[in-house]
Image 1 (cartoon, helix red, strand yellow):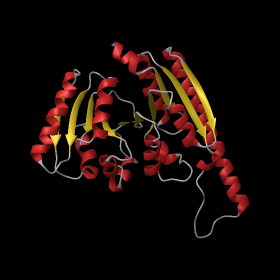
Image 2 (cartoon, one colour):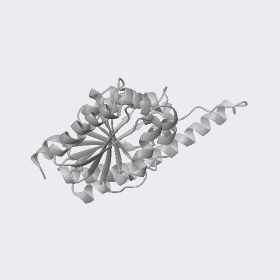
Image 3 (cartoon, helix red, strand yellow):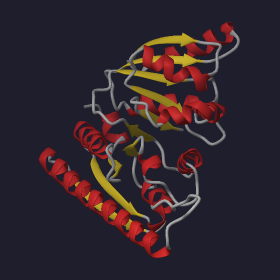
Image 4 (cartoon, rainbow, N blue to C red):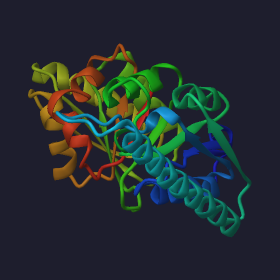
Length: 283
C-alpha cells in the first residue's frame, strides 16, 4: 500500500438508501476501506418529503393518500434498517472502523454537511431516482450535490465487480482535467487500465489533448490508451464505454462543465436509469 493512498483516502461516506444498489455500495465502500486503511461512515437520511406525491385524473381521498404515504414510509424505514444491519455486519467482518449517521430532515443538506469531512462518497446509481429528494429532478439534484462539494463521488451499479478498465471522459476543460487528475492521484484502483476518450470536431486538436493526458497518466504508473470521436458525447460516451467493456467512467462534475451538461442531459439521463457502468464524478 503506498503512502499516497494512505494520505488520500482516510474517510469514506456511503449512502444507506435501502435500494437494490445499496448492498453494492456497502461492498464497494468496505473493500476500498480495507485496501486503503480507511474508516467508513454509513449515512441514512429519512426525508419525509421523499415519498412521491400521488397524481392522476381522480386522486384518492385524503385518508387513503395518508395511508399510502404511511405504508411507503414504513417500507422505506424497514429497508433502511436492513441496510444499517448489513453495513454493520460487513464492516465488522472486514475489521474496519465504522460509524452510522442516522440523519433526518433535508436530505440534501445532510449529505453536503457530512461530505465536508469525508474523502469519498459512495452511493447507488439509482438512489437519486428511486428515493427522490424534495423539489428537484435527478439531473439538477446531482449537479447541485457535486457543485455543493459532495465530491469525489462513486456511483455504483447493481452488481459488484472488480474495476480493471476505466474510461476517462476528457475534453481539455479544467473540470475534466481535475477529474482525471484526482482519479489518478487517489489511486483507488492502481492496476486498472485507462482509456481516455474525447469528443472533439478537430482530430488534430483531439490527438494533442489525448497525448498530453496520456503522458500524465503514464507518469503515475497507469497503462493508458485513447480514443477520439468527433460525435456527440451525450450519445456516444456510454456506447464507447460499453464497447470497450469499461468497469467505470470518470467525469468532471462542475455545474459549469460543458461536458457534464452534455452528458447529464436528454438521452443519457434516461440511460443512467439502466446503465450498469459505475461512475466516478470529481472536480
